[in-house]
Image 1 (cartoon, rainbow, N blue to C red):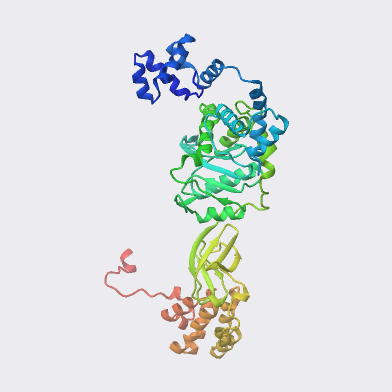
Image 2: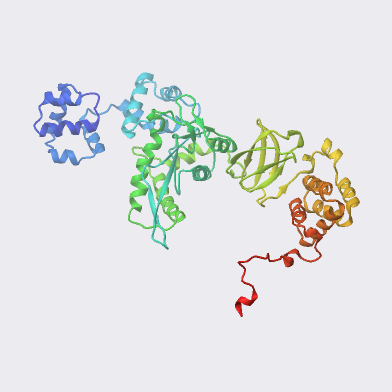
Length: 514
């Protein structure tokens, strides 16, 4: 046999083509192999008297073992070295450990053993044997690879029988290959971040970097050199004190480890659940976690340890601790600081105060379920507990322009005194408006507008209009203005009871119904 084996898939193709009548020369041209290599593999199959059907049914691993058995027996020196390989495989995952260092340790114990170049060669051959899909060597606690499966799962609504497709989130730690799987409603930002966060809590720690494929929820603009990460996901990473390193476009090796994990999950999770019916996402995830536990505790091929044991022994202690609080998903909006020192959050139709020094500035509003922050050019101007009362005000007294010319000219006392010159009803109404708001300065414009109406209608009419508005329990400039426009201030009784029916020829009148 040749010293260097070809891919086992090609060995199957060689024999399949040969038994179908294809010449050795044509097989050589078609598969890109020398005729001597083709001849050697055909002679091998003949020697073992294998039929085309038997070869077709053999797995790649079975073929590989058969070819290995046909080769010359290993030397005592090589068998001794191979005993160390599982240990080396674990140690290379630790920070700072190299093959040079491991060889020095080995050679100190076995001075008659292999030199460095042969040591590296035989270790690489062993890695090919136990890991047919080669992957980059990853240090413990370094990277978490993230992706969604291409295939979806389905749940059935127990009430309507409607089918709902679920996305399946998969992530894998690079060193131990410890895997996490979760079904969710979509790949949207909220679901994506929650899945990543659940994974970090599943692992009990945080790796140095998150490596997502170029998902829209993670990467706004993909690039080989400077991908633009979604602002919310970058903020999430900052909260957990880790980095985001999106995979490079057109670089399959960057994501080979997670794509291989997806293929295994199809076999070990999807397939066993294919004939079961689930009615909710939590039920589905509960069933998947049981299968996932079995997968993680299954020993690697050719090794005596599993993903779980490798994670516990090597990787867990290298992960950074989780923060005390879970991340709150942030949303973003833009606004302008109004002249009353407030910004308007359209999501809740609520107003939040900002220092009067920033009146007129364009600001960025960052909000979660529990707080609201206002920024101008990366400087935080204010922070508030989020309130969802429509058209309400959340005000910090220090934000209002207490030293500003606006307040030096207009104050609560001055408005009350001004209203007192107009009449007692007007004075009481202005006090009512000032008491209604959390901070008097929020009502200055309303008070100013009401008092200026005296120039148009006189003090008496304005005082009567304020009395009428007080009776209604309506404290606003618009109500006083409406009363004056309708002339309700001159009526003694409720104006709704004095609506006169206009005289018109088309109105039938009471006699019509006799």
